Image (cartoon, rainbow, N blue to C red; front, side):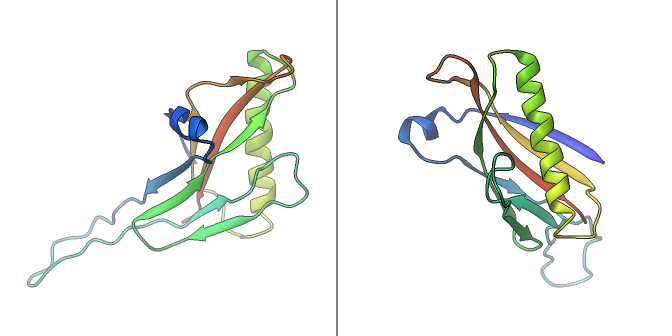
Amino acid sequence: MDFDVRWRDFGDHLAAGVQPVIMLEREKADHARAWAGQTQISPTGTFWVPTSPLISVEHIDWAFTDYGDFVRVPVFNYDTQDRSLPHIFGTGLQIGMAAIDSLRHHTQDAPKAVVMFLGHECQDLPSGKGFRCFVGIAIRTK
């Protein structure tokens, strides 16, 4: 399974109070050129994207994308319990495990690749006890 981490700056979204959304471009098929006429190379890959947070919720909603040039990936905030790197790491593991556990209830297809979008920086929680981190995830199954 391929794992791709992409860092993004969500500062403008957060300052405007808007939920960040990433448009992930789907890979194009590698086909030989047609003999005559116009050639169009179609995007490939079937993606599952959580449309609700992955932890601290009763039910996780998913969107399925298997056509079009882009996959819409919403970014959610996740709070750590403490202001430390191990807690950030642990929150990331929780997010990944929750995604895989929930996804298996929606498809029999095994994950082939995961693209995870992470915010450049975590914010301090008002309580001063933890961080707020920003994560979006897309899972390709075909």
